[in-house]
Image 1 (cartoon, chains in turn purple, blue):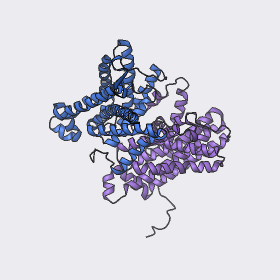
Image 2 (cartoon, rainbow over the protein chains, first blue to last red):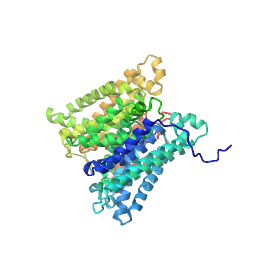
Image 3 (spheres, rainbow over the protein chains, first blue to last red):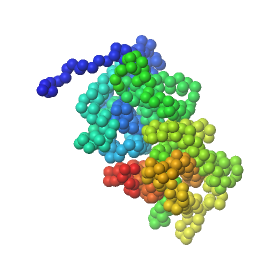
Image 4 (cartoon, rainbow over the protein chains, first blue to last red):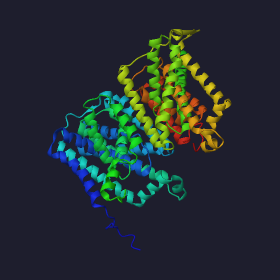
Length: 317
Length: 287
């Protein structure tokens, strides 16, 4: 009867242990502000990659969309920021352009990708992702080709960037988690569970998936823009599908359900990677082994296990 | 001009046949085992480097043409047996595992053989040009063309006539029904995985003199094979065959007329096919 009133109070208890765990994740990311230096550099990297991983986790864990082309959105965001700065546009406009460009490519490729289902989605997202990679490589006049785009003249205060990255991550998680509680989110989950059933109830599965894909693309684009500022460099190598697989590793390690797992996986991965790269050059070998390991052993990911431990066994996703 | 076009036509067809070898393996494996093997390009690259090493060690291209598919096939069989079998029915996990495997293989190959670009000479019997009136054309691409055609006919014959082929088709169509009729899907899928990987290895040996070896070639070949099966339709060898020819032609003539955007023509072709027939040109709905 009063359904039109905005729902102000949500009667949903989160176990304090789980809340503390989530707070400590954000706290861990803010900790390096006291140390600066390399630790801060890695933490910013983890927060930005975490944003991209959370977007993928939204698609994979809640929508059942196995996107293997996320690197393209990351790269589009990066190039959008890089080119905007090269053309002398203000930084804010560049950071606005990043999600817009990535989201536009999300709509465009999604229109084709979601004409198919299941494992074809993975193959097509991979193909459309690699398309951006080859464009970045070939279109030398725009992207600088193999040499990449250098933004070394730019100096963003690392503390400022870090705080921005961590707040973007936290806000994205909260917004996406809220989105999952709306009727749209419930429908999105229903489509993952059984697309045939959802369709027979008259749900336009295609548009639901396309919308989610676009939102995830835009968020990943924003993360890519942030990474461009952070690394002060955009390289076409980062658009290779190895990067998409890295995001997949993060999501699988952290756990694809509940979104916090993606951020946790990103932190875990970034710090492991920094440690591993200090003694080996075999980067693909490392990612590949980690992926195989994650698939074989990390069935639901680490974060849900942690939340259950602290939440007394009844924490929701 | 006509000669140039004819030369490019032959080049495109040869490349198309090479893609067919790859896509055939991918398509067979998917049909029977329901696994999209994204390590396929890495198997191709492994075959190419193994072929190079064996040819140098044994001094004969033909011996390595025989041995390498056996070795790569063996690898495929053990991957199916040891890694993929336990994940039966979990499509996404299986695909991710093959991706990981592909990265591992490609990186090991790079560490072992170096990152430099290697162009492989064709065997002595097939090097040099063939002179057909005004057309002078190297012999090797013609060999690739013939190999592809031969294998297409051979695999078709096997699938149509032999007991193994009938089992493969039965499992592809309906695994539950096939197994209730006394066919063991696990055994058939193991054999198909071996065959498909062997075809990728063969593709590597045959393709090495055509396409120079370099790190990153594995991903490129996987991508090409994926596009071919998306265009042609998964699970049918005719789909792989005509899809590969089409992609070969578009790539070859694209490179000739629009060298800047050749790769995009292929993606555009794929998008067009998806828009009009999402199941692929020769695909069946519901596979």
